[in-house]
Length: 79
Image (cartoon, rainbow, N blue to C red; front, side):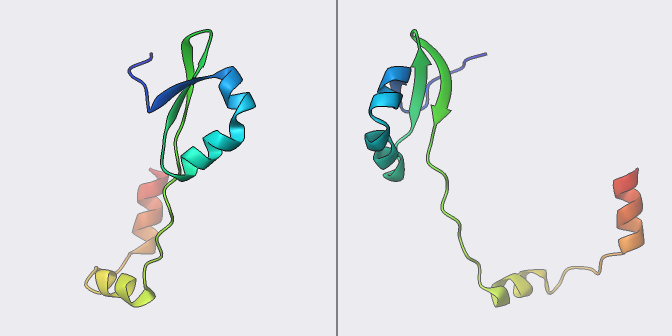
């Protein structure tokens, strides 16, 4: 079921003929809905940039976490 469009609508032909321009627009953060014969068939949106988290920050977040009982975790996953 189609709910709504994401960004600017472009035709299949525009995607094929203007792929370089569309890729640059994606790089700028723009999104597109691709249509075929006026019917939305897909969405193009930029990926999120990966964020690097400092090792010490991660260790600090989990420092107070309880220890993991690996046998219990495995059983819970298997159940």
